[in-house]
Image (cartoon, rainbow, N blue to C red):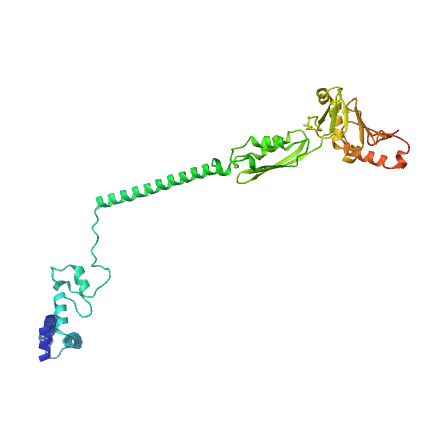
Length: 402
């Protein structure tokens, strides 16, 4: 009994809980007593009515009703007993809890009494001091983490709007800076590739190969120099090849870029198809298209000679043009043996080979592959040529040997 009193003194809440338990048990006992008295008074009233009307012995039906009344009273008594036992067990659990908590230190009890918190972490808001904020009390009682007691953030919509405008302004500024930097980088790259000295074509970096005495390298280089000072990315190799290919004596040309500032030109230069000998004895080399080549003191040995009145008239003559096309496709071995070329008409082109030993009548420049094969077979087969000296292949399927 002494320990119970000390516990109540140390824990004022335990005394309040015990008083509440006594009040509850008295209320339950009074309710049970009222229910029992009500049932007994109702049964007595029924018995008195039955005794006055039926005499000293009640019939069987009244006895059944009396039995039902007793059963109801028994049920009420049993219910009252269960309520009383439940109240007693609750009181016993409170006593045990009060005795266990009395063993803790006086300092812990005083802190719990001030904060309204029990040992299991329950916070009683009714006994919490009003001059303390919720955050400090929860932190002091060991409650951690955000929960239902976290205070909501107060939002100033005006400040929030300003903050959002500032954020949008920063985003716009960043995007503008990125766009400006991107444009600047592109412009710098454009200038570096197209206008900087790093990739400009230079004369010292132009290489030419495949030329001969009839197609000098100086003419090829002169065409390439037209694009000096141009970025190698802008140099048109196609235009350069076309211009070089139009030069007399050039069969084909290939131009390749050599970074950072040079080009390589490979030319397929041909020898003259023939040499035009004018009335004054002047010699002028021409290609198969009757374009005048630059002789530059080159030797004309082994090149067929065509007699003309003048070079200008000769290059415009249709018979001379057909003769040049015939001579251009002949094998070099046969060209070396040609001593004379006659071109009176465009379909009567005639050549003399081996110092006049054989005379070949070619006609015009058509079907030259077939005509060359027929001539080669006839003049190299003694059984066919015999002692004849002239082969007419103007109609190659019906050659005439004279």
